[in-house]
Length: 391
Ligand SMILES: Cc1cc2nc3c(=O)[nH]c(=O)nc-3n(C[C@H](O)[C@H](O)[C@H](O)COP(=O)(O)OP(=O)(O)OC[C@H]3O[C@@H](n4cnc5c(N)ncnc54)[C@H](O)[C@@H]3O)c2cc1C
Image 1 (cartoon, rainbow, N blue to C red):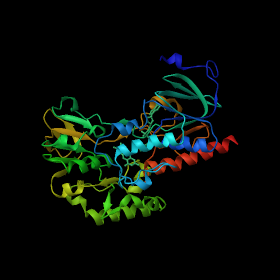
Image 2 (cartoon, helix red, strand yellow):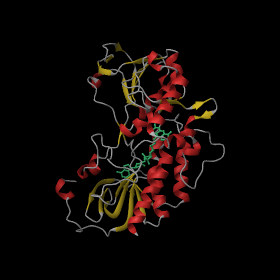
Image 3 (tube, rainbow, N blue to C red):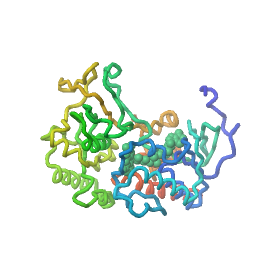
Image 4 (spheres, rainbow, N blue to C red):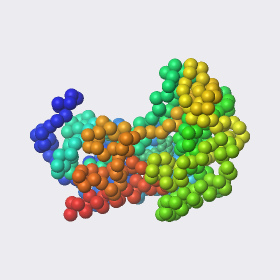
């Protein structure tokens, strides 16, 4: 589409305005807000670009189980089947999202991608792969991990080994006999190491710029995530202190293995740089056993090796960039000035911008509770606001 074709005078050629909400994205966040809106009596449509629900969960690696507990990872009115393990497999999440949509008969149109949205004073104009749509309210629920992000490292094009993003992890057994470098000591980096710690790999390294806020998945038989609702209600500094103390008690001082200290507390980082809390399920044992060596930040790639910040060179066969995700919202929203420098919306959940009435975001920040509980809370809060404005 050329630039000129994008500018339509208000109202000309537009379809009738939906006196309700269009939700963009049918993941957990989009489904939860649509359900809450429908319950509050707001006419709602959900537009989903994929041809089936839960596509991000379909694409995730085979070994993936939730880090969040079953009882805190369901959407309203639908529960997991009896016998679901404490940390459900991704296939259970796929079934759950489909069941939720069916149970509540949510009005989802699949296969429509929203390309750009514009504010038209009293309504929103959406340019989609299927033409124009208009609505009084728009809720953006396109996910905070929409686009895998790999930094532009010097020399990476010429590297003779393989570089993949953690989103393409595949199966742990595929790494048998291989030397693996995981870059990034966050949630995805520890998820990869948790799985690799059970595979017959050759040497592994973890390149860490910052130490993580790291909690065990379980202490004895107790799933640590069960405490998240309590933690979420504590003052941030107290939650930081409890997490740091738990980390120290369970794992000891990981800086002795070369892991840098975390720049700030786990609860603080959720709100400041949107870093999720990492979960250990075998990685720390592998670090302590010397199967994973912690090395400094990656400086550059050469043909046959990787140079680290301290000048040391290592020669992995595979580099897993556990370097996070981006929202990828610049094209859709760039003109509105609602994104920070990393593409994260400036407001989320019940907050909005009075200069852009009717625009809402959900699911754009990590939370101690996890994305499902957060989707419920934010969905209900947005629905209350929209229903309140319509009265
Ligand atoms: C490897 C991994 C493991 C995770 N494990 C956990 C966990 O254990 N517990 C937990 O709580 N969270 C976990 N998360 C985070 C969780 O996946 C996300 O926070 C969650 O999926 C967010 O749901 P969502 O609805 O916000 O986004 P998504 O599930 O990403 O859904 C967004 C939807 O929007 C659609 N969409 C995007 N752009 C458009 C567009 N332009 N037009 C129309 N539709 C569009 C997408 O196709 C998608 O269906 C994990 C994330 C990753 C990457």
